[in-house]
View (cartoon, one colour):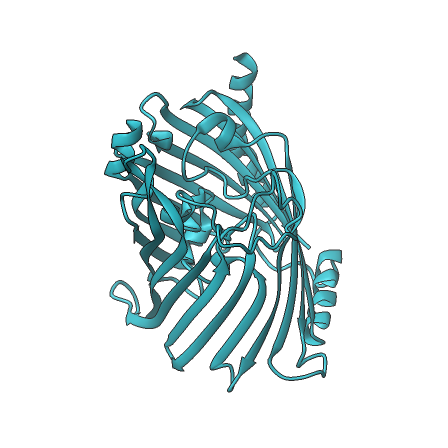
Length: 422
């Protein structure tokens, strides 16, 4: 108990005292031209001009379930991303082609949600089993001056579908991909993608139409697909079809200088063609009634509200989705939040954000398992850009009704994320 309090006090002190000191020592400005980091950045830039891009990103979360949940405790989770992209046009091969290979190494000592919190939406979006595995391996061909794009290979659905720009700041998993999908079945998103074919069309300047077919069940890193190389193509897993329309626009700045402020509206829907059991209804043999397939609809809005200069200013996002109640635990979802980049004077690249979501538990799941009406999350976070390649992000989440289980108390989760890119 004493050790747990010491760890909590350490995170609080780090956030309040030490991090501001670091940001004073390392202001968020461009690196000196003769620094090793600047030289390394130039090497990467030169290679990119020749058609070869690579990224190495290490992300680590120190998470503490301070109160409530399954039990109090701490977890360390980390994630090493390794990616290589080849541009065939810049390599003097052919126009419009791109190859990507992307691997992940997951580590850490414990799983925060699984061991301590018990929430549906996952407090840390990098929580995953310990493994070294393939995440994506695909080829993309652009045609007709990039008006048409075709991609085939191992792909992560959430890199292109159901993505919110401003929600990407937050650590809770629901602000990445909505839990009406991931809270009800294993989807081809982090930590495992699946085989897919995606087509994107831009019929007019501000509109993009996307459609894709994914292998419906990517498997599990714990068993069967530990290295991400098992292509789980079978009738039982089914195929997942997802479609999305993205409309980009600008509105006048009603607060400041009358500048045009960018915004995006995304509308999408998906269908998974495999059997799902009814949560309540039984057949004559007392077995759950099977349903042919599952489906859902969703919407995402990203909107800049106020601009200081460049990318500095206030932005907001809204997520909404719904699925059938008789075969899904999470039937509806609403999430929204606000980000402000450059709020603190002299810290132009830092971003502060607050977000809130409600993952509604379906009436059928409540009847079958005695669950609460919804799991709710309030997240407050601050991303500190120590240098162009190093960030620290203190974060706190207040989770109401974790997992919808009435026996699990409301949880308070404190987290510190660090990220370094090469």
